[in-house]
Image (cartoon, rainbow, N blue to C red; front, side, top):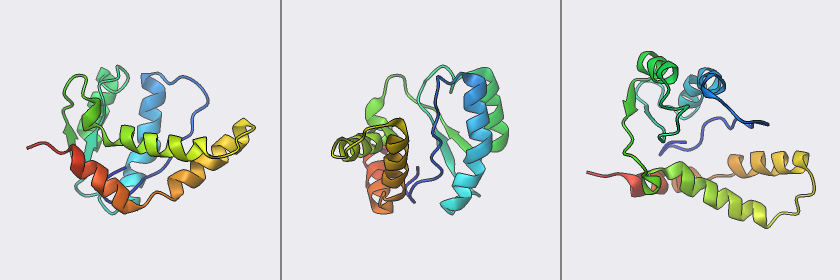
Length: 129
């Protein structure tokens, strides 16, 4: 996500290690940035999850992202995607989900229906001077 809206949603079925995360970045980051119209100057922001900070992922980002924002330790309030997931979770809680497939459908629908203004507000609320 960015202040311009959402990029691709990648649904995963199992735990992801640094190599799986790197594959997700490779498949989605440029395509998502292009979709949002920010390909030339996007900034990658990740939390301090060990797979995000692994040497292989940091090195890849160095060569494939215009800018990587250094994340302060333990800063959930500065991570707009966490707030976006809270919104999605509340929306899903109202749905009648009876299977994994229905959950996937509802997640995709909720992701597609996110208003770009919501993303903009969340990103702007997390900016620090």
